[in-house]
Amino acid sequence: MELKEIQNLIKFVAKSGASEVKLEMKDVKITIKTGKGKTETTIIQQPTVSQIPILAQPVSETIINSGGDASTEENKEENSNYIEIKSPIIGTFYRKPSPDKPVFAKVGDTIDAGDTVCIIEAMKLFNEVESEVSGKIVKVLVDDSSPVEFDQPLFLVDPS
Image (tube, rainbow, N blue to C red):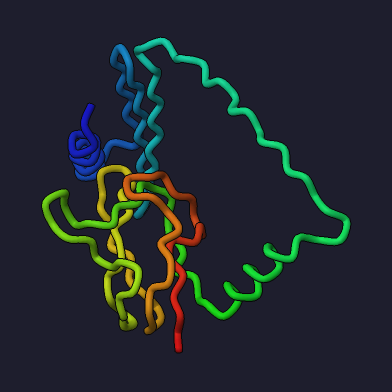
């Protein structure tokens, strides 16, 4: 069942004055409860295909020096001068508005606050990510078409 069909069903039930409607199909169960000024919807979808187990990825070993790694400390100090543009949502990161268009922002570009730097797709919705700072893009931290998490750094910007 498509999202639009579910939305239309919710609107129909709300207008009809029914207090509760249950709909069951072979792979979807929907319960819609209406009350004064509010509508509550519960959707339970049962998978129709068998799930494939996900194998755990091997974790690489990290050797930690007791004295600390000088190059890592230098990188942290260098990066502390930069501002991170972070992902506002979970989704798929895209640098271009479409495959045949140029990237929004690349390393070396100067951006202003409010400029679109990428798109994150979440549930078939494409959300433009705008820069909150002005400056020069120093590094792109995520590969194109990669999944990103909420608050994950996407770009490093030099504000000077």
